[in-house]
Length: 151
Image (cartoon, rainbow, N blue to C red):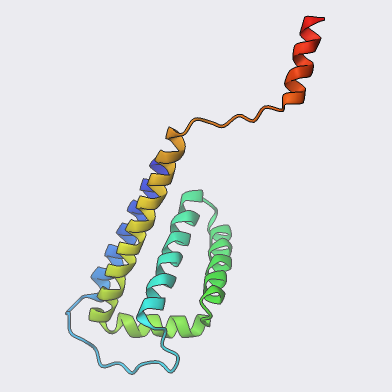
């Protein structure tokens, strides 16, 4: 559970840093929307998963080249999962960065979603620790062992 809390804290710090960069003056920028703008709800889901990947990779303590390769593979999987091209995601991300009010709203929801996932994960860990281990005994093996001891 400690590792999960460390991951969660890393995610929060990363998002707070990004939010600070995004909300410099609070004014909406009039940057042109990219042709294939990723909708905000989809952006929230993608960003949440990308941040989880970043936390996972950082937790592993890999060498920089291995970490980059691992991140890239996961990122590509996430883009495919949501049917988004990498360039479209990057252009959308830049658009939202230039529109801090929208980016702030996206990251409020990303944080909320990550908090919910963290609570689910912690509950699953606690539940698994409270349940007794189920031991399956093969009755034939138990009977033959008993018979061997009696002889």
